[in-house]
Picture (cartoon, rainbow, N blue to C red):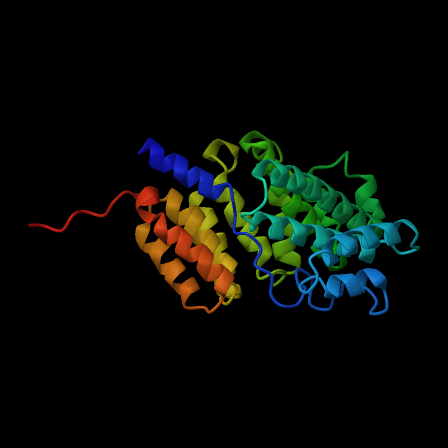
Length: 290
């Protein structure tokens, strides 16, 4: 049982990886990465065809933000690009694991910093009081315009914390839970119900003494599935976190079969990999009676 609990904890500490749709989304519906004539935007749009374009986009977005009278959208674009680069490196088996972890940690920190600077530029009053008020009170002052930046700051901060170990995730739980709750309230459809999904993943990962609650985690993730049923990340997260930690094999299989039927090749590969580990996560099924 101890081995199974440990496996569940590892799964819970790694929420569903972003599975990007063909267009850059991670944004609120009307958001764009930048003006069509902007060099950074052009590199961003070529990121699927040119392996080096994403690196160029990151550098250009951040450089342009330094010289812009309105840096908020450029910083938000930089945060999006860094998050995408983290996701891509995470899925490459040909990279050195130690080097990948180092690069992801650097991107996670910079992504969180860019995102924070983005919402701070739009809501300077909230930013000015950030060191004196609880996170929930600060987040309450951030409106819809800053929702994606708040979300990316929390997502990338959580990613950085997980890369450092489980303790930093516990230490930052209050601000992360507050940010995801605010995003779920402000823009519930953002990033495929990302606020609900991240709330559920985090509450499943945390121990009960640190705010973890498996029942609430399931409620958040089921709400994410209901709101964005075609986004496989919601089902994958529900399977690899709540189902594993609760040892609910039926829920695990139900969610992964739905992912396999959804037609997303990348998500199907993740679902298949999880199903291949099913006996490790839940123990072997009972042998058929003789």
